[in-house]
Length: 509
Image 1 (cartoon, helix red, strand yellow):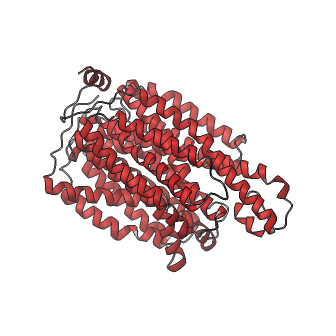
Image 2 (cartoon, rainbow, N blue to C red):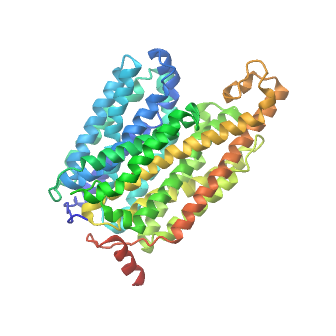
Image 3 (spheres, one colour):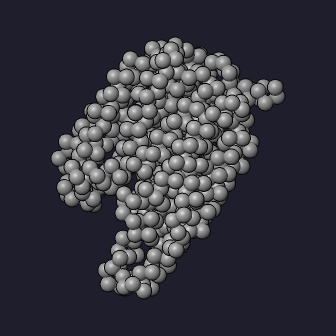
C-alpha cells in the first residue's frame, strides 16, 4: 500500500463544526436516493416520460456507485478536503440543473451528474472521519452517519410528497442548494487542510473496469424484474459484468497507483467486512423500502402515517447507532458489537416473517423496534473495522470498497425482495386476476375489488411480504457466520501496519 498520508486534525472545537458539515452532506446525498420516489408519478406526467421514468432513480444510483472507488482513491492521492469540496459543488450544480429540467432526457442527464457528486460526498465523508477523529472514536462518529441514513429513508419520501403536493416536484432538487451551500462553507473552514499522498498516475483503466462492473450490477438489479431475469438484455448484462470482473485483479496488480490496492483483495478484514456490509444493506433496504408499502396497502394508512408507524424502527436505529459506537470504543473490540447487531437484525427479519393482515400496531411496533436496533448496529461498525485495519494513506480506497459493496447490496436487496414480493402476490391472487379493475401486477388496485375478495388479496399481500423477509434472512445468517471469522484491529494510534498482520498481532496480545 502507499505511504501514510497525515492530515492535521482540527482542534476540539473544530471537530463539531467539521462533523456538522459532513452530516449535512450525508443527509443531502442520502435524501436524493429516497426523496424522488414519491415525486416520480408527477415528474412523469409533467415531463411526458412514463416509459422511461425508472431511469430518474436508476441514473443517480448508477453514477454514484460507479464513481465511488475513484473518488476514494483520488482523495488519497490529492487530499480528501479538496476532492470533497469539488464533489459537493458538482452535486449542488447538478441539483439546480435537475430542478430546472424541461424534459426527461435533461433530468436523467442531470441525475447522472448529481450521482457523480453524491458518490464522492458519501465516500469522502466516511474517509474524512478517519482524518478528523482518533481510531478509538471513529465508531461513535460513524454511527451518526448511519442514523442520518435511517432518518433519510423515512423522511425522504414524506418530503417528496409534501413538495410535490404543496409546491412542485422541482423543490425536491432545489432544496439541496441552500442546505448544501451552508455545508460547503462550513466544510471549507472547518475540515483539516488537505495534504497530497504519493505522486502517481491515475488508474484510468482500473476505474473504467470498476465503473463497468458497477453499471452492470446496478442495471441487472434495477431492471431484472422489469425486463425479465431470463431476457436477452439481462443475460447480456450479466455477461458484460462478469467479463470486467475477471479482469479487475490483474488490471489492479499492474497499475502504478491502483484505485483498489491489491493488498485489499488479500485482506480478510476488508473482504469479509465488505461482504457483511453487502448482506446487511440488502436486508436493511428490503425493510426500509417495502415496510411502508405493506403499511399503506394492507393497513390502509397514508404515506405520511406510514412514516409515523415506522418511527419505532427509526428510534431503534438511531439509538443503536449511537450505542454501538460508544460500546465499540469503550470495549476496544468491534466484533462483539457487530455480532450483536447482526443477530438482532436477523431476529427482526424472522419476526417480520410472521406479520399478516391482522397484525396489530403494537406488535408491529415491537418488531420494527427490534429490526431497527439490528439495522443500526451494523453498517458503521463494519466501516470502522475496515478503517482501523488499513494505513491512513488508504482510508479513502478502503472506505470506497465498503461503500461500493453496501451500494450494490442495497440495489440487490430492493430488487430481490421486490421480485419475491411481486411473484408471491401474483401466485396467491391468480384466481382474482379476472376481477374488474384488479391487476395482480399492481397491488394498489386491491381497493377496486369487492369486500370479500379484497380481504383475500390483502392477506395475500401480507403473506407475500412476510415470506420475502424469511427468504432474505438466510443472507444475513451468512453475514453473521462471516463475522465470527473476522479479526478486527482496534487501533489506539494513527499509524498502522499491514491489515492482517496487524489483526493477528492485536488478537495475540
